[in-house]
Image 1: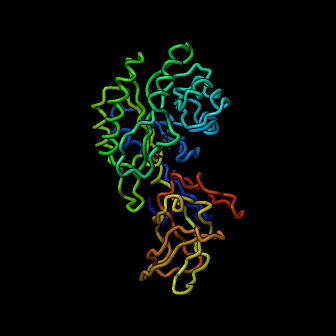
Image 2: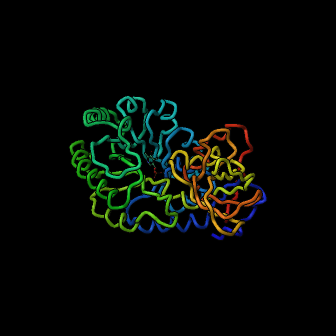
Image 3: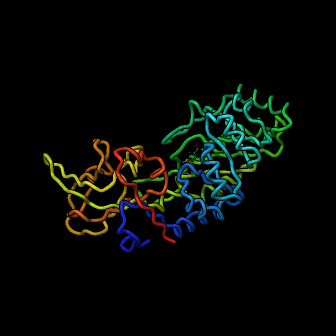
Length: 357
Ligand SMILES: *Cc1c(COP(=O)(O)O)cnc(C)c1O
């Protein structure tokens, strides 16, 4: 995508989504996966245009709430849907009647599920996950006793069918580590499912593929991952979010002020982390391009308009001489960006949304 030539940038701050780039990217993931099914985790970015761009190239959409479920059904009426997440209410589970898969996280949740339903149980397994950005231990899933209790209840309920296991265990992992984890899950899950009468076991091994914000050109090694999964004797599915959509969104805004205070230079940008919260939640410098200025670079901290010292996009980064009106495009803003941000804080205007087609 040629950033110097973005359409519609007279209106900013703006999110710009590169839909052709996203399509090419998801096609390459799909091609690398062989027989493994690809569901997209809508919570990474549920934007309707993004969902419609992805839909022809994924096997379905994973949703994590009744709200996402309703939104995905309205946006993509034909899509297969898997419903996960802790703390599902009875109302949410009622919405899920007839969807492709329900991921059950506790025996009580199973009791709330009326069916008909095809269920994957979420184990909470004591695996080692070296190098993870987050591990999904704690409240997620069930230990062996609770899993056995669920399997016993399903065996007595003609409206609910046990299909397999859902194991989203960690995030931020590279392909060899994810493969190691997938094999550990399979070694436990396939025999366990057999003892509960599931002869054609299904394993959803989650999302969490690494995205390196310090290196926007680096990609998760999908070919290595896809090839390594082929050894696992089960029906496999993955449900990545961030590694699918992060790269094809930009947050573009302009400089309002530049000032040097006690030796530190601050560039104050229109908008802020109430539009793009990613650098705050991840504790990183959001990668960016200065679109309109050139020249010798010097250090500055890029901040937004919020009345909090936490409103920082990037700290002590090198920038050319900047003046009010110069444009900056923050990269890797296609996932966990707009939709995780605290939009109403300070009541500034919302960003515009532009879609490259
Ligand atoms: C968040 C989540 C995902 C997607 O994770 P990414 O890091 O965006 O790939 C997949 N499955 C479950 C259960 C999740 O909670």
